[in-house]
Length: 471
Image (tube, rainbow, N blue to C red; front, side, top):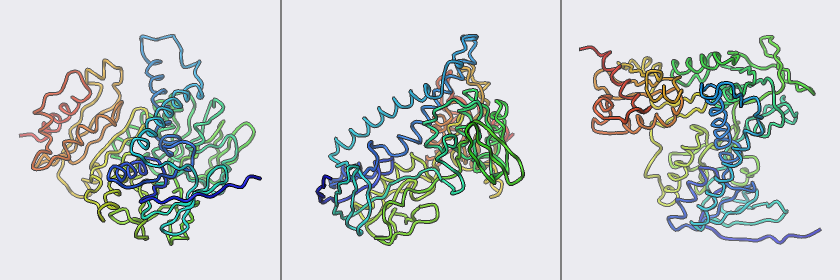
């Protein structure tokens, strides 16, 4: 048996995890002269975002969306491309995107002279880490400061057998090795809703089981209702206010029984109900860190944990649990490590992007929130079916909704449902962030948009809302 010699090295900062949060922190620290090591337990950098979450699922969604567009286009009527495509073939495109992302992100670490160490990190004390490598060898790192950016993974309740070949979570579903005719999706949050539209777009029968009264209840109700209608109109069966009593896998099917007495079965099941922080292997007890029941750490406004020199960013600290926000958290956290406190904070209006088919994106307040706060607001709407660009592209499902104050005309919320919603929302977000009276609905009336574009939905919606004000 070969005995491996342990190595020891000194760094200013160790960043645990190479997802968006870890990358943002490492790059900012390295550019400011810190000697930085990043520790990644997997063979490739990028974290769950690149390998199991955002990138592969959105690449898969893009392929299926184009497949739907192809099959619905009168230009290709009768070609029947869909019948020859398998899930694994569509996933092949996603694997190519992942390779490109890994290569690109690896170059960032190389250019900025950040040391990348592959292995499993654990605390010895607050200034010393042990990194266990795949070959059994160890690295010991002596550091002044540490950033935890280990991300999250799908939540696994103890009474569900995730080792069964027909029971998947949002990570393992990307290795689906058969083409189901029908699927049960338990959990109708962002991930569950996205996969419901993806599988239905491939012609798979979908039962979407939701524990709440409506889909994505944090959204503006009109947008949530639009998604529900669109999914149902395309054949997805949505079951609200249901909780599972048991989930059993068999050789040829999965059977789910609900607490209300319903029995459902399908070729396979995707369990998409929550996520847990990747905390277990860190040996947090050695430094006195205490995660909550979801494996998440509490931090202050500077992203500092209960231990003065240990910080945390991204999914491991919970809300907002977005890749986009995690990268910004990493960069902002780095300023606290460098200067003692953060000179910036996340913007107050973080856009939400939900990659269903069609997409959903929103920023700011919903109608329900404004009504509860008794804010006098008005609504401006633009239906995509009335836009020339949407008619040309065939993507005419959806709308843009602007909520603005009746007196000051300040934009209070933006909500978009339809193709490219996650891109369209940023135009309105930019105006919302303007100060000194620059954030008003009148901007969209007084500016000139390219024609035909989807962006002109802002002008249409603004005029619609202003007309509601009357004289």
